[in-house]
Length: 442
View 1 (cartoon, rainbow, N blue to C red):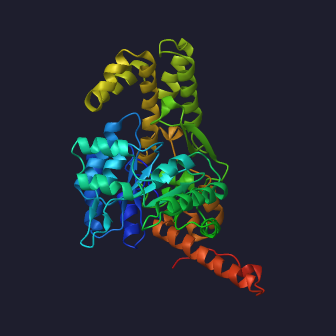
View 2: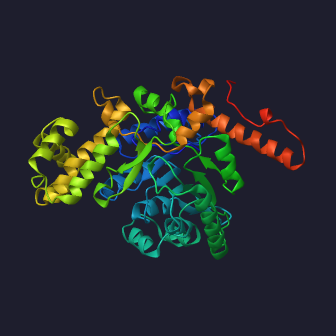
View 3: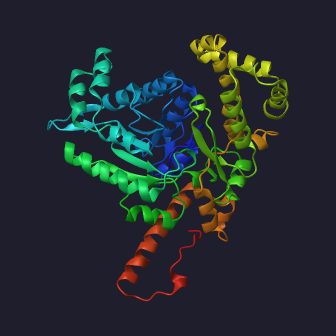
């Protein structure tokens, strides 16, 4: 499976190309307006009427209405697989999506129409997705008329997720967890919860974060992963929604060329995401913005010299102009938040800073000329590992990287290496030259 990358970086082209080869790809819906998401749904469903495809549902704690609108679209167009990410707890929105798809067949067996793949990096979050939906939320949905009495009853017998993707050290939102520690822990948790609830279909556990080579994929399978998910490596592929300049930077990245930086969607909470540091100053500038936010109570309280630096080097426009544009946007999209910001200087400052954080990822996707130094490029160390592996092969060049090719070589290579190791265990002497898998055109 290929994971979602927000802002349409995991594009329609990517999902369609993978789906035609029966590989599940997740569209990067995070950060996109509802009308853009609706276009993507229609296009992908037209190209893949029988699937497979998935759409991302990213938790939006600062704007739950966005999360709800995405769920409404998925239910309207009968999107039957979502990849839920960045959730710290279950929300009414994800529960609504799940439970609204429950029914009984002619044999009186529970049918789960709406599949959920939960991407997690913490045991406590995984536990919530492995258990049935909370009774409190079910009661609220029932009272609102969003689900039926039957669906409310059935919800107590199914887990919130069909699949749990254990996300280790990935690009974007990540807790930088090591896969070798996290995956066995979550598999053990799954087994414990399965014994407790005895689900008819046990939850599958997959691995993501750091999956970039045949060796890393094989290691995940050996540890018990039911499937693997790639992410960063796909951003440098032709089908990616990133611009050519971004793809070239990614194709040159080393494993150490990544850094943590403040996230736009959870800025005030101090949440960080992993980005590329080579060829861009985004991480340094974003961290400066967070330090200013933490140290001052309003934009006016920031020393004049610092404000002038922001206007000249980071924003490239006056703070007043940034706020004017931000206020105009919020007046259309979230007037309630605008009203709060007018009377809350700290919130107003955060929104001004989030203007830069939000646009920087769009500049990277759109290829905004003159803003290359500010590109926010989500990336994990897997990108460097992939580049090391393909060095000297046709995949070394970004313009040769097709997402299906990349998936094929990682999985074929993993199978090849597994066979080699099996033969070695049986005592066969195999020359080292035969123990490596190198990608070649096929």
